[in-house]
Length: 81
Image 1 (cartoon, rainbow, N blue to C red):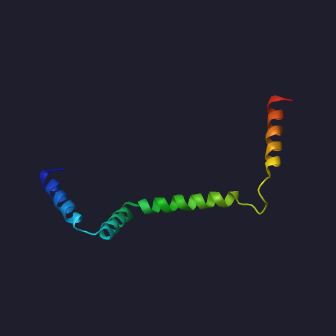
Image 2 (spheres, rainbow, N blue to C red):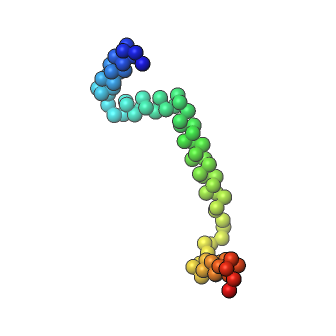
Image 3 (cartoon, rainbow, N blue to C red):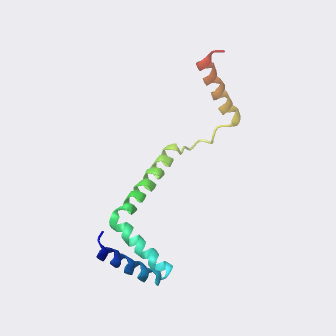
């Protein structure tokens, strides 16, 4: 960055200090939109929603007793009686 760029950047930052928070937020959203960050965030949200849907069942959650039985069975399989 040369000195002219630094002066332009300083002038821009000074002008932004006079903007309202809403105006600055809108600028940030526009800049992020140009970089593709929003698309990445939307993809992450869609992936998370899909992962949650894979875990969803129409059955009730297991009881504490069922879970303990599974754990006991696993311990027996792994370590013997």
